[in-house]
Amino acid sequence: MFSNWASSAVVSVAASTTSIAWMVVDYHRSLRSFLPDKAKQHWGSSLMYFLWNLLLIGPRVAALALFSSILPDFIALHFLLLWLVFVLWVWQQRTNFMDSAGGEWLYRATVGLIWYFSWFNVAEGRTLGRSIIYHSFITVDVVVLLATWWGYRDRVQTKAYGLALLIALPLTYLLGLLFKALYYRCFHPKLLRHLEREPRLQEDLAGSDVAFRDFSTQDGAPASQLCNQRMACHAANFYTNR
Image 1 (cartoon, rainbow, N blue to C red):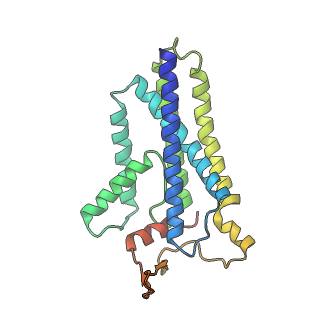
Image 2: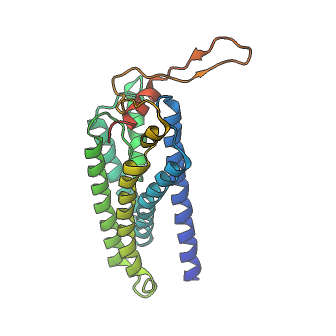
Image 3: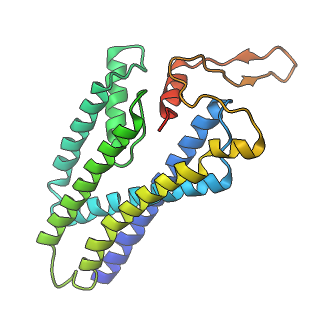
């Protein structure tokens, strides 16, 4: 019975991780398609983007699942504490995407929820520094979660795989960081522009005018230009120089 439960847990974690990673890729492609001056993300670039997100989110979800398996009453407290930290961090970056203060705090709360699993940039400037801070924090958190699970685990039932998980999950997260660096070094869509001989544009769009795609009506009427300030600002900050 225990082996069946363990198999089901592994399948659930793998399925949820794959779904989250794919949603991140789809979101990234949507942002890129929103800005017509950005190079399109080809299948090779998308695959590498998916892989490093999978390798980063997978150990995170697995560590949370292991922790909740031995201390289920504390996983909600863990989420609440980290969520508050992330919301305060978003507030510290002085985001200004919504039209009202209440809407802005709702946006920050949503970002805090997403950052519990995966990070993306929400403000211009110092993107690399924020990324290092976030991944360092999550690495420490994953290690603490795994150490707690190791201390409270059932030694008999976890004898076959306990040590392997303890070693493999942090290494997988570090491998994801390596793939992320490799993506920005070798597979980023802007690197393909030189091969396609497209003009190089500024990567940092913060504070500049953003062009939008036109959608013409079927009857041949003049196209109206879409203007979504929040989406434009968010896309510009997302693609700040890393």
